[in-house]
Amino acid sequence: MAWNPTAVDRRTITFDGSLRDIAVAIGLTPEAFYRTLAQLEAEGAIDRQPGRILLT
Image (cartoon, rainbow, N blue to C red; front, top):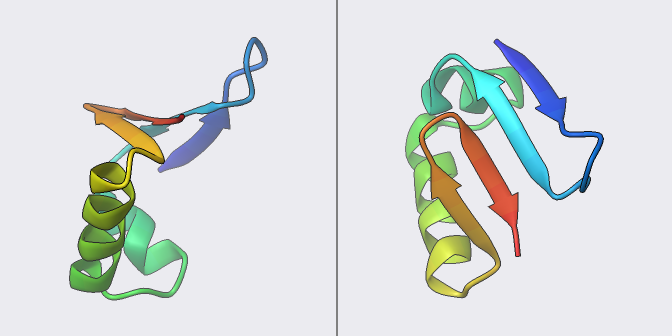
């Protein structure tokens, strides 16, 4: 798994691997991580696409 904030805008996080891998790497259960991402997306704070998360 690799985190790679793009140099162009510093708002896009690209990653290899699964969201489950990221959750485990940062010490969260996958379920808690998925719920948090869903809440942030519903609030308009992020936009999720395969392999990337954009901070809005």
